[in-house]
Length: 331
Image (cartoon, rainbow, N blue to C red; front, side, top):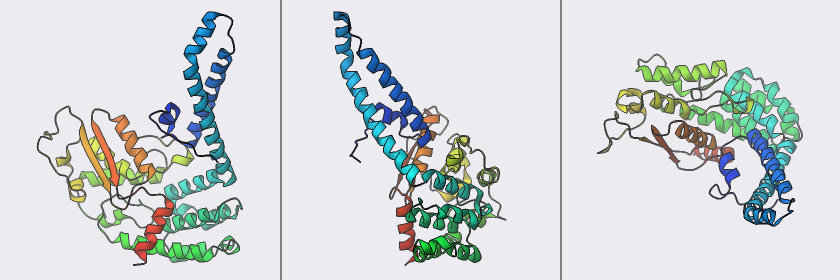
């Protein structure tokens, strides 16, 4: 695999598709290829001086299109090879169903995924960790570790370590006041800290939204679920939706003020003008690509009203998150 430079400032295809999912990018790549083939066929017809002049005028743009098409065709072909060979679509479907359905998926469903010899060991370990995060009962955790394929893959000891670390990490978070943006109704939830307490309507709206999304497994507050691979919605969506519903009048959000500090700056206005309102979200512990995509869509859908900036200690993927969990739980 050769090195490929992707720059949205000079690559229009990348700029238009950098925030789309794998299926949409593949479909758009087909359109890019058709466009190139059409342009290429038009270049072959040169019967006059006028045709030659037009060819010379179009040639730089044609070469740029040729280079862009070749680059993205190579990249998408490599992505397709890895997705198919490592069964990433199968893994993604299971992950999405797990985080949106919770305990309704059995250990046998997980075992069926792990049986596939094309699923990599690191993906098996991650799936076990994710299952442990959703279902924290001791007997279920033990059932995970009893899946025969873990022993045949020689990863049972590693799975045991990450499962126990995830259980300990969840217990550490469960007793802390972190606001109502947790794992939802299935399994231990930050929402548990609020049950039976009388808060303002902001908490009820968010709690109902989270619970309805998990129960119905259909749409989020900001957009409908596109397909089975994009069912999960990050909790920041519900926070942004509450801000949007309040039209940026943070003084009305009693719960938001208790959970997140809101600082008024001189010259910021009274919230009733037509100026764009700035929102800065800083995530201690890191943010994910899914969260950055949610904020990108929020900004795109609320141009002129809100401008949200995402920052944090680091950009997370599953490897980094599990490494951080290991550090925290190991003392």
